[in-house]
Image 1 (cartoon, rainbow, N blue to C red):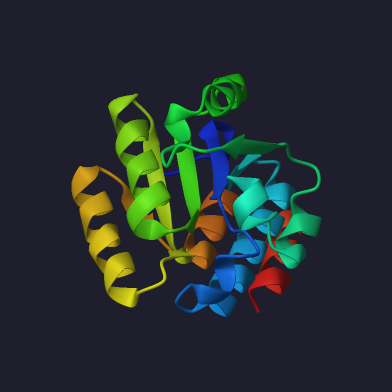
Image 2 (cartoon, rainbow, N blue to C red):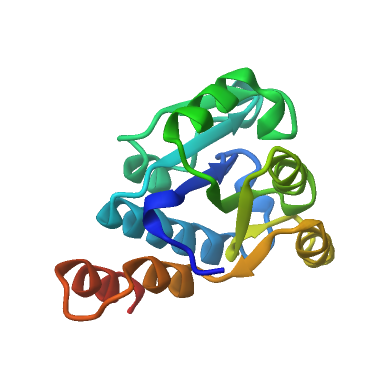
Length: 180
């Protein structure tokens, strides 16, 4: 399936201050998710952002918080974003069917959201270098399960260039600078 920006939205799940330092390879996840969000902004792709129980887990991490300031943050307490009515309303309002997935933890909130998105007729695309868990094995197992459940697995750089489609454009030049 070729991913088209006209039918795509991004989703950043629960990359929050108090849990994030305990996440496996958290610095790489933060860097890659930042690149993903910046690239999606360049391409005009909307991004949804969730925070799980903000009072307990804190806000989105500072470096990412600045990048998502244009997007609404949806508070949730359910593990699956799809169990939060405000998320479903926001997702429906995007009119997009392909959802790029970034966030934590892979084996809990990301996994359950992927399963529910597939059941609702969406096509989740797991941006593998933008997700993680506290333990590497939990992430790896969750990625395998999400693929079995119907998610397409890719990387940040790959999906940004797929959405860009052509070299020589201003968007291509901007994205090339981001990923270097």
